[in-house]
Length: 201
Image (cartoon, rainbow, N blue to C red):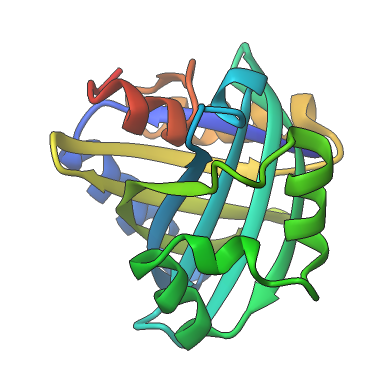
């Protein structure tokens, strides 16, 4: 179970202010490309699941992820998550020809998708996706991720923190933003839900 604090920032100016504030704690920045898949009969989305290929930093690595049953309440997201690495060149071939994903017999993730969601004869379809620039900071014992998510219908901004104590992490993060006059709100939907709705929250 992945548990994250998710706070939405209103605009690019707020995002830049947070970036400047946290700059002494910057660790790295990732450029991510997220591509999603579903069954031909929407077997995954109808079960509140998402299958994603994520490419990092000009295809330096790729990860196949399955997320299911997301719940976001009061700025805290809980979702079942499973993932495994995949060779980037193979992942690119799967984006071009989605049937290749289900043909990966050695993949534990693919076996899960087949067994749990009944994917097989109908195959997979590529839903498209979005790009994300993620700056990572280590601040007050927390790993913070500052996201700029670029959809083809607009850009959204969030700051996230995965934590086993989400309420404590949220208090610290809210305090940081309030003390520095940075507006925020609780995220109410996932990035995947935003992508599928084609509308910024």
